[in-house]
Length: 220
Ligand SMILES: [Zn+2]
Image (cartoon, rainbow, N blue to C red; front, side, top):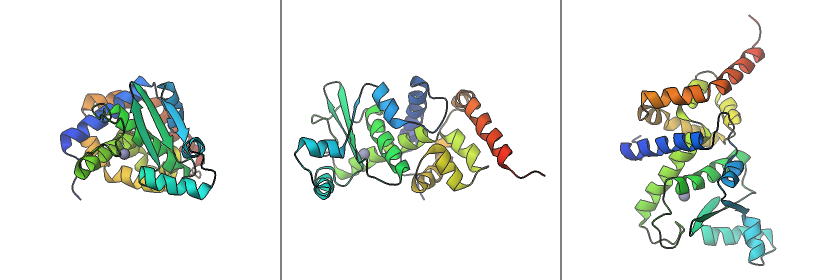
């Protein structure tokens, strides 16, 4: 498989994910995307809320509307002036999928994707499909590297089962597989100093997980 992102773009997304976690003072996992979004002062609403605004009561009509308006995405983000609104599908399962969708939208904002768009939303922005795909891959890279930073993913991947890792970071199994697929590239584009800074930031978390893990292992 080839890296779907040019290496400089990956480096930029991974760096921004790390500085976002530092800015939000995140030291342990699982991440709580809804809390982070509110702490940023951005509005967070559900598709049901949106349906209520439009007078739609039938849940199936909500699903149809979602497909029509948001092209079946689990979440979307819009900007008006300096304000951001993230709307998401609270019915999406498993729940870890919601976390990834929310951090994907946060990524669009953090990476500045909405800044230069006249409409303030990526959908219907008139961007060519290939450009949209690149922006989505960047947002995915941001989501992976905030929900399960590369140095932690590498460390726990070597010690825990995939299901345990998915639970630890509260992501779906599919999101965890994606995390692993890009892990080597994400690690390779980080400077050693940045890796060390993240390791010391998350050291308390690392030690706690490894202590709990040891306590669960059978003696001998
Ligand atoms: Zn997107």
